[in-house]
Image: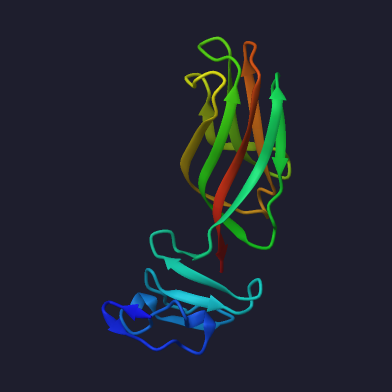
Length: 190
């Protein structure tokens, strides 16, 4: 293994295999069942008590420990939708989620200023109060062609206060749509 032009031996611990712990202090990490008390930006901690062991990095601008692992889930897939339709996705409730991206691919049979769909993702409270966190209009896409969208998100989803994501497809005019909507996220641990 070569790092910055110098040969290195392979560490015995497989978790440390891809980490060069001597070059940059941000790469040094602790292995524990709790986070360090005074972290610096970029500091890493391998939490042995979370999901069988998981590496986290401290984001000082957010004040959060976020998983190095990026998760991507399909919230819903749909075919031949011709009217306003809603879907729901329940995240795992063991950790908060830092939502990073909304990903979508659609195929629409008609489009324009009169016939189109608008997709939204909203976070819902237990009392069903909704706060939209993403909106995408499909008015200017090429008809009968798959079109992909990738939008940056920056939202904290706390399953304790918002246990459901609501995905709504709202139709204007007369159109048919097919596709899928997903999100990418990191776990936030405390």
